[in-house]
Length: 286
Image 1 (spheres, rainbow, N blue to C red):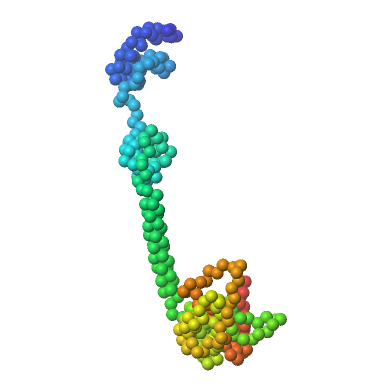
Image 2: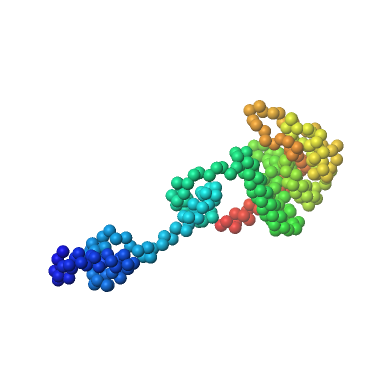
């Protein structure tokens, strides 16, 4: 092979030298410098068919991971477990270990279900503890209510849950119905704050026909701190076969209806108090 300068005229002789140097363990750069071959195409032809020495090969950064992945797979680890352990992708793991036999399941279906249920129970217990903690902190944040705070709370509570007169049906009576014992206690404390005599209060249970009224009377009597003898005849709700009731079981006590006798003036004051709260809220929005 000739070259313009005649530098590579003795190509075969040059190749013999290049091959000898290659087999002696020299790199391409070392051979190029020794033989003064500056043309890469020529150097490639000189070394054609001669593998590079092992020391010139760049190590693969994933070789160690691959070997570890195969080792773990042979021990019966799943792809998910190997991924967590080695921090590599599932696609890489699959490529590395796909020739290995699939490990036998570590657990029977029954054992897997039991493990899942145990994990769910542990998770729910942790969530319950967190809910409890949040509620306890929030309860402390509420602090001690002043009389004014209780007054405003009671007004808002009544307007949200109490009976209200309509322009087409004026019924100026303070009637309050709720199924939450805490709400009932706050409402009764509010009436005490307003100076409403307990003798003016009338109590009645509103309950589904499938529940026991005696047990409901005992429950609400304890909540309201009254005797069961003060309750009026309960109002029984008939069952609708088209509906599926969820308010059943031992925790169901129906609703308590609290009526204040001779309460027209009280009701009108409640309307006025609520109007004042709304007016102040609207002023803040402007």
